[in-house]
Image 1 (cartoon, rainbow, N blue to C red):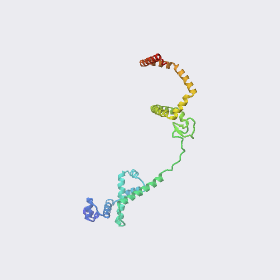
Image 2: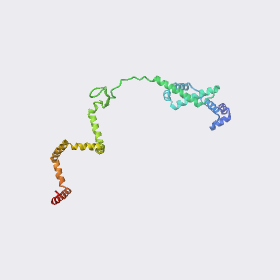
Image 3: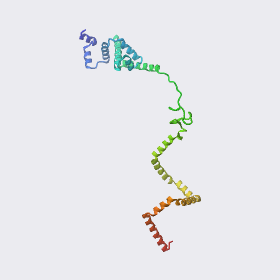
Image 4: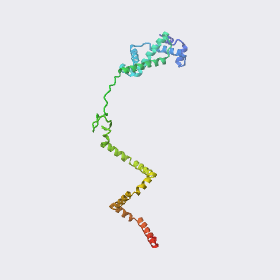
Length: 263
């Protein structure tokens, strides 16, 4: 057949052929019919392989699975599925049953594929067997008391036994050393606020007026000043030049007051 006769069969109207070649718009129905007729002539020879691939897709198989079985890429499988879909749409339009919107037709085909895929996954999925829960991931029971009733804390020890272990004590000591400066600052601020309270000030006054506390403080002072370290510290303090000058001034003032008869 000549090229002119082929063109006439594809596009019976010259205006339609001109507009489609330039990518210009026609009416919706005319454009859809022209596309279907065009695809019908391109994919008029369908093989059994193409139809089987289309059936596999509608049954719920993915493009990857079909490509592995047929030794094709995903893109090639998609092209074959679209070609078969367009061929079936063109047959329906050619018979004059109805005018087809290709987008809606392809979307409906994808919906069918998704529903079939869900049904297939439900059938293929094996039912879950409820296994007995272990006490922990790596241990069946506590390493010390061998219990499974008390929940797991860490390193194979239950919540009762874990604080007794050396692992917990090392972690505790490390956290204490890490936050020791923050803790001291917090304690200083809290002690300042605490000793400024009126309740605490009244309590202190009452405490220091008691005869028991007075006797206790006297004993403590006597024992404190008898310590060798404290004696050395006092000697060093009075040997300092600034302290010697202060003591001299105090002695002069006392001498003057004695002469005047103040003492």
